[in-house]
Image (cartoon, rainbow, N blue to C red):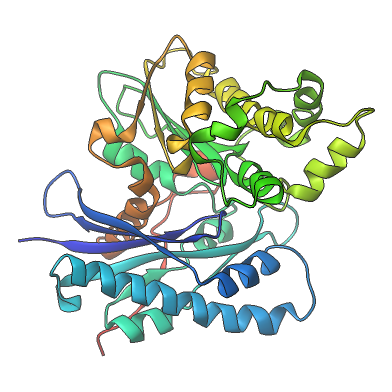
Length: 371
């Protein structure tokens, strides 16, 4: 008997929502379909605006909260229609929402996602589990990253130590030691695609550098790379998490402004690829017994970035998660389907050693869709 869940994930790139249909009836979850549904450009612009301090934020946030939920609902129903599945056949939707602010440090730290789960539940008629980060934060954690518990459930191997690298807007890694252990380690390494996409859009008009072709034509600038690597986040100890609040165009332009010479925009793009690959590789290489590295997220489709990462991690076997039966683009959406499954089945969805919380917990808030 199928146990079907939907997972919805919209990342820091703010380009749309990934929707995954997952069957949990076997011991190993099975991805049935995953599709990306774009945000309307007007909503995308509003979300970018909300990701940085601006005027009249509360009203803008309140309206965007509902608008994001409507896009999520349309994506959910379309995915079900495409797979000939009825809403009443879905146990629950796991919705990450859209992060608009992530401040995981200081007094009253918080992480804020919008995409009203009540609206989503009402429009789909399906129970929704959402708001996954705040329970972990209440327990003293950073509320991120949340995918390592899912990585352990799906990608761990008792005979080989592995690292899973997720390259979304922000990049994070999960270390999965071969011994069956709860001592998994996971944290954000720094920027993934967020600077690459923003810089590419600014200078080419394209939303991203397809396959890294624009960056691949030039070499990185060593002086700029060293300057960017000086950000204190990179030397901070784990557990740690970050976001666009720290790594954004103003920060990049501030660093470029402190250079004594002009740097060609294409050279900057090549340097940003090296910033992502170098800061990821430096963290992966700390785990001396790692034999296999699996990449997922949008960055797995950037061929130039993957080549550079392969060069930095030449002692490890490098694959995408496609090799383990999960499309690289679908891993995060599938993770939130798993977090919904974990909530319904009273399974801990967070790992204290990853987030810094006092203990792992069942995550999420339940919004009934079937009254």
